[in-house]
Length: 440
Image (cartoon, rainbow, N blue to C red; front, top):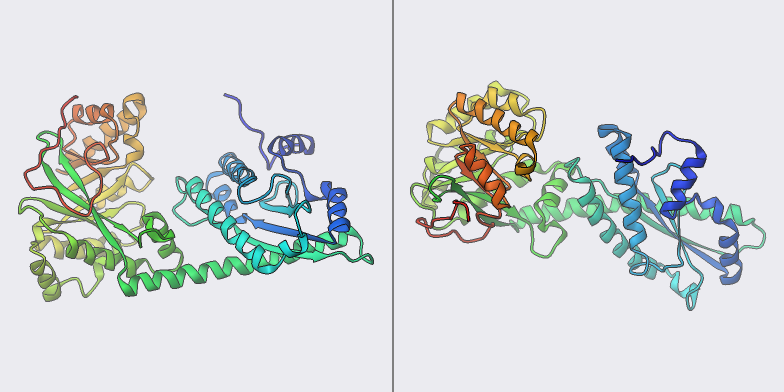
């Protein structure tokens, strides 16, 4: 398989050739065309795209993956042509090997000066930013759980015959960059305030996905999953918790989600369990113990042995001794413990060894197409072997294909979860429901 040339480490000729293939050149190569627009239309407009957040991918994963992400981002911007921007708008980079992109607005528009009014430009960049950042989130989420975004700014200038085109364009770019930074700060303030409002108004929904016994087809448990306000950018749990992490509201959001998961569930069988995602820090929540906890469980028809805390290995546990002390308290009330996302990172074995959970949840990255990947199969066998040695049950998530289901059943995994077995819903299935887990 051929590899793409490295943006950060290649000759200027190679960089220019690839830029041309992507439709991007440094803006200085477009000076004659920009001069024509400026003199004929007596104005020039710019949308400034600061995607320097993407540089964090290079720091964490290296140049090759960074280049792939950057190429996908450039392709996304280019695909917006003909939709949110005109085909003849000029898309270019600020400098060679740069994460700052410039979109000079074509002068081939009716009443160009009216088009460049601030209200019109703000509307365009708001729509542009929404579309672009949604795609950037999809591109980068497999590699980082942080929110990486592009800050979008705009500026326009009027023709001044006393200034050179070069100086006018450079001033235009600096103005656009300043507005992009301002809009980036404004965005973080807005999402911070939006999340606080969601938490204060308790404006979240809980859905429940069945966890199925892979031997009998019985619904052993449900996992409580949170959704933000329907139809909003925060509806996605990835965005919801990503914003919480970036704005230091993870604890406040997590405790709300946990309480709502217990309050909203109706119809859980006495023998069934509810898996509740929990950040390690919220194990210390003083309002989730003692009489307050007993009353919360009782008012919702639950007992301690119905609840399993699900702790992700992606969230660092700084002090295992202190965590185990808190877990001992909940264990005495009948609560179980599951470690989630096993196999997704380096902390998997450490989490199993230190926490000795009752349930080990194998990450969907291992289960996806496991029937076609011998390495993934060996990883599942290794995790299963370790889990059995500590007496833990093996729960695999992300089962979407019949072939995946067959493999995990052959390996003797205890429980399964995924769209093939049941999608998340607001209402539970009847306790005696049987899910077909046999070959079909």
